[in-house]
Amino acid sequence: MAIIGVDDAAQIRELFSQRLTRDVTLVHYTQRESRIVVPGVVPCATCRDNLQLLEELVALGDRLYLEVHDFKAEADVAAKAGIDKIPATVVRGADGGERARFFGVPAGYEFTTLLEDILEVGGDGSQLSEKNAAALAGLQGDVHIQVFVTPTCPYCPAAVRAGHALAFVSERVIADMVMATEFPQVAQRYGVMAVPKVVINETRSFEGAVPEDLFVAQVVAAASGAQASPSVGGAGSTR
Image (cartoon, rainbow, N blue to C red; front, side, top):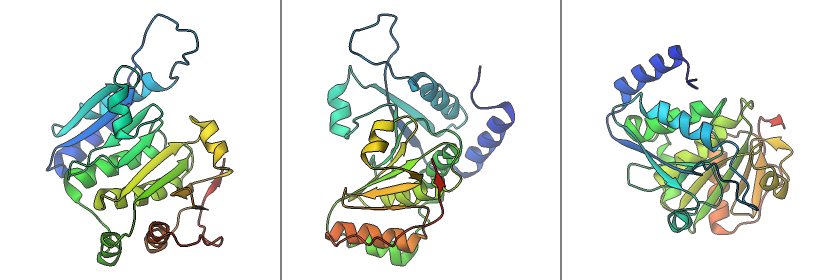
């Protein structure tokens, strides 16, 4: 059974045909299915659905491609890319960088995030303000952004898109969507009680979707090693 409905598929196909002017590659890390049960190896519960979703999606765009890697069999490839959990999907940027990442199935509201990422890389280009683009150009250090989300959170896509937009522009930024429901141990480690929760460089965090200027300011501060402000926050949902 198809995951993307007929009507949705038709709309996405038209969207891609009108707005994709450059090739876009989705790099996916998964677990190949096996009928053999290996003791001590926990199967990836959502890998099959994630791969099917991406296969259906790339079939809707002539300029959209899918590159699939086996997380276990190609462990060296995954390690080099910094992929430490699956399923994982990376949107390869226009510069060839692989810095905008989805850990977990980009389902629910986050499916729109994936579509918007594809359109940014494949045709629309960055929508960042000149001021914020300049701020990113002057980053003093590398930045790792983790945005914890759930499929039913209407505020989460804005936070993920903000992080990914920065990653597409700056080679110093890596931005992850982390589906809290698929990686509960990771969410617990970072004390995720409400979403979206944004964690930057393990040194600062805030909850809720915030304006672009404030998001960029937090990233710049994290890159410079400045102390975190406890007052940052925006719209969000409890888990």
